[in-house]
Length: 266
Image 1 (cartoon, rainbow, N blue to C red):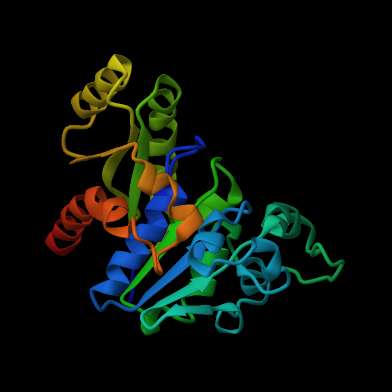
Image 2: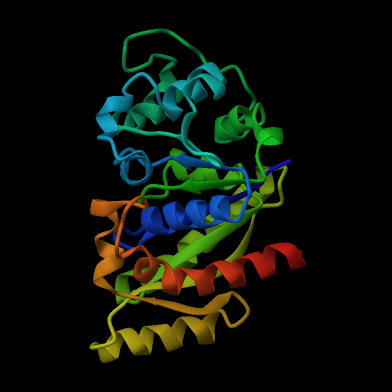
């Protein structure tokens, strides 16, 4: 049965989609069967992996998979070992559907489960035996989408962009993980904090890196992801025929190694 890992923080611009996509790619490269799930209506993970506009997946996305509790119809093959459950902007209507039972198409499909925070978990249960890992991207908010992702996961990687606003967001996100653990059947817990988007030219970034390590010494990964142009251009060039791919992945290889050591050690 798949190990499910969510990337999260309620602040935007912290590298969640990029990190999710790279982790999915590295796992699949190493022979693991992987499902990447996009729970962000911006669809950045969808576009990174599929190399198609997210709007091409209207009526063929994770939203419909959850409404029908049927993921298999909506899974998109990417590579031999990597599949995608895509998203588009209509995922933003997920909360309205939960509470009204009316889809963005006007259909009446009521959720009949006990807890709306477990819809994604119930959906993924249909395919968990098909994968070694499920990795989930989340939106920059403490929304129903994020809560569903947390409740569907064993592990959470918290993304920390080295800034004051992200530093202030961490405690609330940690509380959200604790809240998810109370209702999840997976014992949802933080497996680590990944420091990202580090600007080596800024002394305040160095200070926030040190502060988060002091606050969460057992959680922070040793790896710090520094801003590099090849990582930023990954959204343009993707993983195929990308001359900069090795440069884009170099720092993430260290994070990947640390993460897998923690997963295997649990």
